[in-house]
Image (cartoon, rainbow, N blue to C red):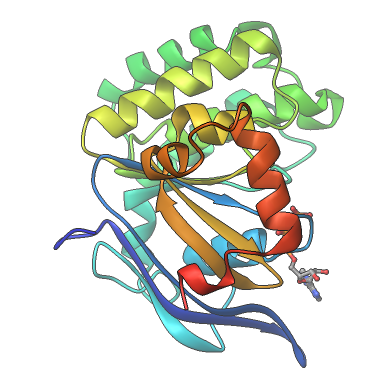
Length: 250
Ligand SMILES: Nc1ncnc2c1ncn2[C@@H]1O[C@H](COP(=O)(O)OP(=O)(O)OP(=O)(O)O)[C@@H](O)[C@H]1O
C-alpha cells in the first residue's frame, strides 16, 4: 500500500438493475505498479474497470483517480488512458482521423507528434493509418485503440484485456510500454485472462470471482507462497476455480 495512490477503489458496488456485478471491491494502484485483475468470464473485471473509467456510476462505494471522481470530474480524463475490452472506435473514420480528433480534444501540441509517430512505428501501424476502421482486423483495432489511449502520455493506463488479438511482436511492444510506465513511477491497471502475463509483468494481482475480490497479493508473494509448484498459472487457475482463498481478503 502507499500514502498517495494513483487510483483508489473503495467498497465499489456496480449493479445492472437488481443484479450485482461488482460487490464491495476495494484496492489501490500505487505509483510504479502494474496491478492485474484476474478472474473467470463474467467475474466482474470489466464492470470494475468501466466504473473506474467513469463509464458506469457506482451503486455504492467510490473511485478516485489522483484524488478525483472520474464520474463527475471530466478533467481527470487527461490523467488516464483507457483501452476497452472491445475497442471504442467510429467505424467510418480512419485511424489518422481518430488520432487528429483525440489530439484536438485533448489539446495536444506538436510535441506529441513525435511520440505518436513512435507508437505508430512500434506497432507497425503505418500501412493502416488511412484505412477506415470497419476494414481493420481485430488485432489492428486493438493497436489503434492502444495508440489512441497512449498518445497523451497519461500517468495511468487502464487496460481491459489489452493483449487480445495482438500478434507476438505487438504483444512484446505492449509489454515494453507497460514496463516503461511502471518504471517511471506511473501506474497500470489491467485485466487479463493470460496468467503467464500476470506472472511476468504484474507487481500485484487481485482475483475477482462472482463480483468479489477474493484474493490480493504481490506477484512475488504469490510466487513464494507457491514455492515448489511448477506452474504458477496452473495453480492460480485452481485457486480461482475453487475460490479457496476467500479468507485472504475478508
Ligand atoms: N450491461 C450489462 N447489463 C446486464 N448485465 C451485465 C452487463 N454487463 C455485464 N453484465 C453482467 O455482469 C457480470 C460481470 O460482467 P463483466 O463483463 O464485468 O465480467 P468480466 O469479468 O469482465 O468477464 P469477461 O472476462 O468474460 O470479459 C456478468 O454476469 C455479466 O453478464
